[in-house]
Every structure is written in structure tokens, then in C-alpha cells.
Image (tube, rainbow, N blue to C red; front, side, top):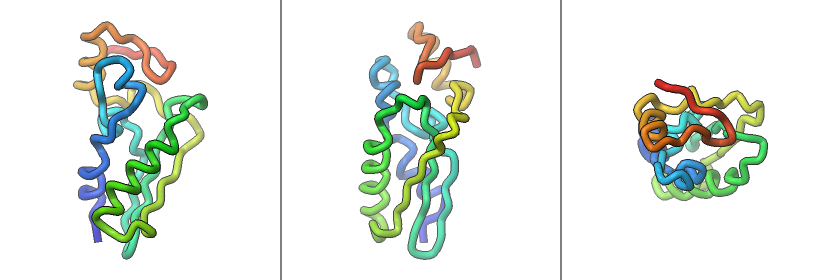
Length: 117
């Protein structure tokens, strides 16, 4: 059985397309999009934040997570859920990643204003 730490290690560097578009690529871990990971015998559930109600990347994130984790376990045991409550804010971005964005004069991401670390 994979641990939460193992799962996070496998998926955290899946690139966030919004950050790729800025020229400062960040993984979903740095973006703070991983809300929760639940490991159980025979499977894992990954719950992700979305940055905006307009986010069109849910299918991309789901496919990437399923492929990466499915290569290490039974693909039928991988479940991806999305938190549509829109609780994600740029404050969820790791401080060093947020600073890299600000250093490149990027002030918004996911349609929201960035603030300093």
C-alpha cells in the first residue's frame, strides 16, 4: 500500500497549466492544489482544489494522476475528486513558488491576485 507521502511524491510535480502559461512552471504540489490524499488497502483517493470555476484542466489533472499512480498500483484503485467550493487562493501557493512568480512580475494566477510571501 502506498503512503500519503509516496502518493504526494509521485503527483506533486504534475505541471499546472496556468503557471506554465506564465513561464514559471509550478507543480500541483507547489500550487497548493492537493487538498487531501486518502490511502487505503487497494486504492487511493486524491482530492484537488480548482483555482477557478472556469478551470478546464480537471480532466488533464485526473488523467495525469491516474496514469502516474496507476503505474505503481491497480489503476482501478485510483480515484480523483475535485473540491468545487473554490476555497483555493494564491495564499495556498508555496511561499518560494509565489516569490518566483512575483520576481517575474506575475501578479495574477488562476484569475486571482497574488500577494507577497
